Image (tube, rainbow, N blue to C red; front, side, top):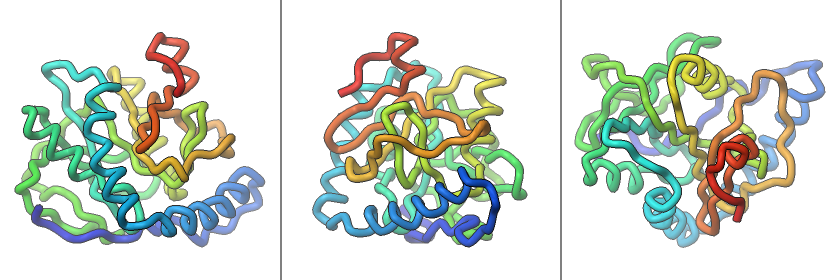
Length: 220
């Protein structure tokens, strides 16, 4: 695949705040970065392979589906094998484009053969000539997650704002993909944190509380 290699997401890593929830998240981010970085190459490759059958089994894909993915950065679980498998099935894909701080992400159409350009965070994005699209499904990166569907992100709030906006405008299924080692009993959360619908790991599929209430299945 053309485009930049893996880059580290460092959004707001050193932010200082008097907010106890933000402080708890910041401390947890440092810990979970170390946990995720300690996962072996073999475990990473295995988890990336297992995302394809897990996604196919757990996620309903209508004919008009558009899946928004991400390009893995640093020690994140590699989403590219899953995206390529979806592309081979005829699913339309998109990748996020980061705008100004405090704004939602924009998604542009993407194919695995497309070149990418690094944004100001050194993360690969589609070129400006690619059309904007609205995903029906969003694959979300994370540092940690819990069984209630809440995720620990990187501190910029981009995905929370994006999910909130998409949920007001359309039906969206938010799917976290992660290593089992990133699973926690509870992730600190604030009023602006948006839950995921599902989290897929190399061991199981975890449906959030909201998804379970809507009949999405059982936690495993």
